[in-house]
Image 1 (cartoon, rainbow, N blue to C red):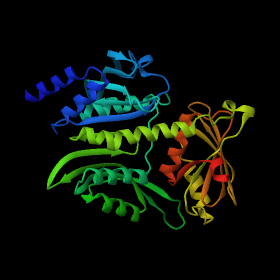
Image 2: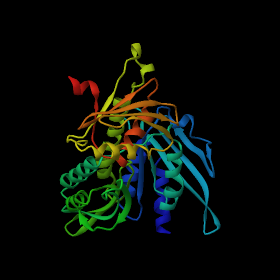
Image 3: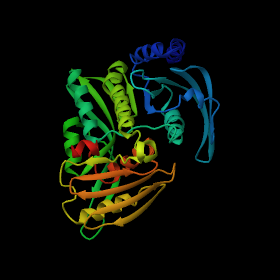
Length: 368
């Protein structure tokens, strides 16, 4: 009953963007409630298309809304052990403010509501909604900065979703998803996954100081954040940096299609690995095999040795790209007549997830 009164008071407080953030900070003083956040990019304000939407069994209705702040009710049903169950809950959408067209969805509803309803709903809105992709290196850096800034003695990884690369002689490289409970400090965990030729997809960790757990936090490569406790610090350490990453990516991915540029100018991107990734001839085949796993796209290998040229057609919106490997440390992505922000982001996500991570750069910056 006390918890019910607590959550009712929260909903009464959360009437605009400023009040919502204050109410979430207030609510996080009780680690009973897990606050969940999905930062995302949407060129068109959700207020124009999200209300009264139906997606499969999911339906959305607007409670109240203005351009920078809305709250909605999401209802949906699902089957579990041949039994049909229904869920209903509230979520909020607000602009970050500093970064144009970057928004955050918040909810304090159950994990069942988030995992079965809200998260699949947002994923189904692609390419209208675009989430981000946090590199393994950036994931570690944000966690270490959070630890140092707040003087935590330990960040203990309690649960990890990760991928491992396995390569046997005479067989193609396999990327295998795994889940573990390493119970390791952050630096040790990242070193362990690196030594095992892998990378983290998501992490759940405890922030500890003076023997006490101050917060239980979940952070994924999609930029999804969940926390029990310390909402204000988590907002500053993870949510805002993720919003900046989204904004920076939108800026660098924008206006890449030739139709968008004067005289049909070509504006390539580069993935810089910082090492001779393609030093061995066998690496060409590894990259090509990784690209063949790209879903909802046409992949045509035009050359595979000594250089690589691949043609890509994205089935979502018809964006087309040429991918070139002309030197051992870089991949070049050349958008053709259409190269949308959403398609570029999806293509780079795939390369990072199924092949290897690097730094994204404008080709013009490299050749200067």
